[in-house]
Image (tube, rainbow, N blue to C red; front, side):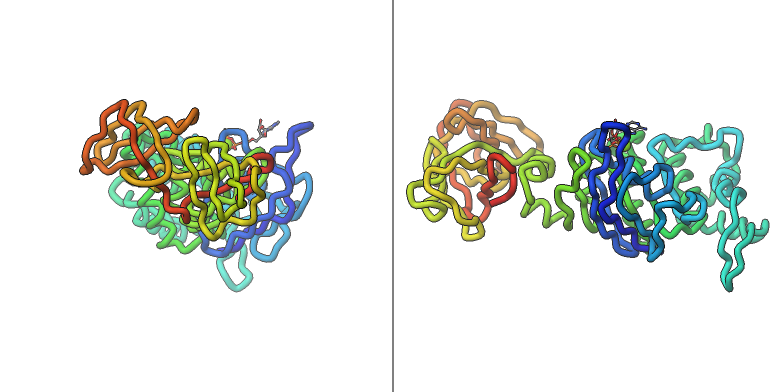
Length: 365
Ligand SMILES: Nc1ncnc2c1ncn2[C@@H]1O[C@H](COP(=O)(O)OP(=O)(O)OP(=O)(O)O)[C@@H](O)[C@H]1O
Ligand SMILES: [Mg+2]
């Protein structure tokens, strides 16, 4: 078990800055998800921890050791890749055993050596039990389902009892149902192992459901790090606000009313009051307003919208509305009275849930 600390860690490939001065402190035993769109630098950040990518600038620590120049095999880290190729000619047991064959392990009292057959066998049994593979140890990968293969890849990663466990989109080859089930298994695995997990994904649902903390990255830069609830309720900027949440947050431009923040914002289709947490704003200033679809209340309030389309999602409906010349999506629970397309509605938003962002920097005001 180890903490993992990035201090100003940068990785450049020629002109491309894949990871830009990353500062991130991951606690011992924490489950942190690196979340961001394709190409934002997630895999590169993970590969630097594993020692598969040289660090251009900054300091990376595992535990209290600076590992910038440490060989991958000396780091005691396991990584599961998106394409977790198993050895097809080997049984499940042999696949799980494979990392134990290639290097020495710290076996206590300063002793560092290759494990004996009995020690390896004990570890295979333990890893297989942890992942529910006990009865499959003699099978070859071809005779396993996708989910079982995925679990073999995880067992192979935990068998070396790593100080930290790195996963790069390990669920992307699974169908939606299996992905949801495996998410729960991963959270349980983390609880059982009590080891540091660093998990990379572009899927905000995976991040929000599994992480102790989510680190949101865009263009190689860390945007915000916090507990799922924190980044959802108080996104640091527009990127985070729009990336997290499904359906996404409504965002549109508005003008600060004549008497500043206390007067609310003029949406062009009514004045919307702001909550006490909004910072000072100048009258007439342009801002970007953010409202989550579930925070809109129907039937009363200062704004008028017209319903352009209705999406029925089973447990809820999403009303696609027009607010002046912008779109505003409104969530409505399915039990409530149905609203026809073309209807005109009065809507309101609890001022505490109206977010205001700077249109230039994107920062929350
Ligand atoms: N070996 C390399 N040589 C040159 N550029 C690279 C190399 N590896 C990555 N990059 C670039 O660095 C940036 C970050 O890549 P990275 O693979 O870390 O992104 P990612 O967030 O994992 O994306 P994805 O979600 O698509 O896997 C991209 O612009 C990519 O093209
Ligand atoms: Mg990647």
